[in-house]
Image 1 (tube, rainbow, N blue to C red):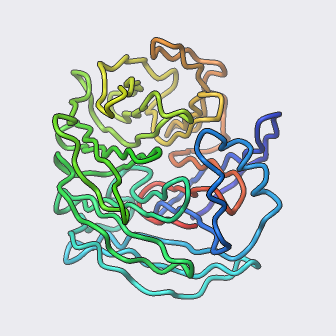
Image 2: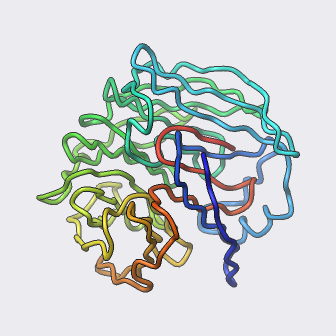
Length: 313
């Protein structure tokens, strides 16, 4: 994956924005150092700051997306950044196959906030798999469940709530993450995207978990869903993308989506309480054709996501 980026410091956090010109997978990063259980999502900004000083070994995970049997390939990551194989862990489902960016998505693999559970899509069998992450980075399959739709390509997790984005039928399906990282479908928690949705590519929670945002590459828009107390989604608010082909994105701790556009630009948005998005900086040139986006806050408590399938801790 070829990338370039810059570091942006604010009072709340230090963020590196990296735009991928060629990304072959989605990647999430997790440290092997003992987890600080006091770093809850509500205190994530402070956790991220403290993690900045705790660089150490970790693990990197990438999804094979093989149509004959999907698997997560794991690598140990040394403090120097060197990688060594940990093994391949079967998801119990099927990938979609293909070569260059077959899922046309981001966040096909994600880690929870504590980095002790990993989740992966099985686009070929319409399933989502969950794993427990061991202290050494090795994975133990916890569950493989129906994605609630057709061709899941992107996942979002916040606390014990996970949503899968199904791109073929334009749906979102909700799950609870129960003990041992097992997934349980929430009854009546499959919600269709708004009429006209096409090319759904990525899904993310806001930092506080009160909204879920979806980018749509072909219809070139963003949908914002309120998250109800029971984990189900309310009606979406649709906002047109300012630039062309909204694709990869992530959300700052101030609930500001930063969206890459495949025609070489990046836009930032302000999120209103009613779910509407208003451009802050509209389609600033990124200097090349961009389609992937990475938001990184320390190596210990970050997820590193490119366009399709790897993950790291």
